[in-house]
Image (cartoon, rainbow, N blue to C red; front, side, top):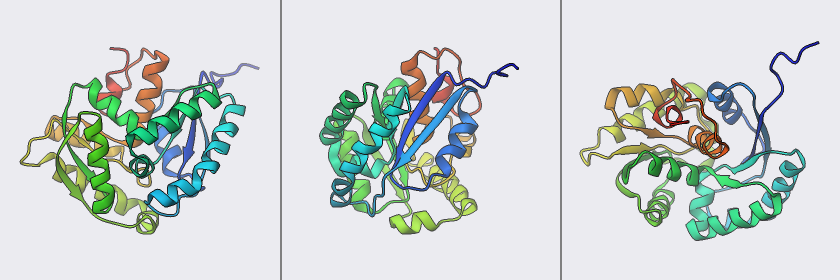
Length: 249
C-alpha cells in the first residue's frame, strides 16, 4: 500500500484563544500546500482585557507542552487581542520563554502580520477590525513599536461574545465591507491589516487586493506565510494574496 502523499512534511501547532476550533482549520486547509498538518489546542479567553489574558497564561504554557509532545515544527499563539493586552515587550518575552520550553519557535499571528508587512516593504497601514476602541488603540501602539504607522482605523465594534455569535455569511460579508472601507481610506495606506480569527476572511485577499492594488494582511494567511518562510518553503502559493505568493522569492 502506498502513502498516496499523505505523510505530513510540516506540522504547524496552534494555541487558540478559545476551546472550539472552526475557522482556523477551515482556512488553513484551504490555503496551505498539501502535506501541512495543523495541530491545535485551546485556552479560554473570557474577554479582551489584560486580566483575562493573565488568567490564562498557565493554560497557555500547558498547551505549548502538549504541542511539543506532538512534535510540531512551530507553534502559533493565535489572538491579536492577547498580544495587544500584553504589549509588544510582554508578548516577545512570552514567546521567548515558550520557545525555550518547547524547543521550537513559538510565534503569534500579530508578529507574523508585522513580519509580512515588513517583508512587503510597507510602513503605513490602515486597520480594519471588529473590536472596540481600547483594543484598536492598543493595536496601534503595538504596531508603532514595530515602526508601522496606522494612518486610519475602520471598526465595527463588537464584544468577544458578539464576534463568537456572528454567523459565517455575515462575517464574510463584513470582512469585505470593512476591508474595502480601509482600502478606500483617504490616508492612502500602503496596505491594510484586518486581524481577527473568528470569521472567514481569506476570500477578501484576492478580491480586495485585485480591486485596490495593495496588500491585505490576515491572521491565518500571515501566520502560515511566516511559518513556511522560516522553514525555507520555495513554492509560491497563488490565489490567496501577495504575501503567500511571495514565498520562495
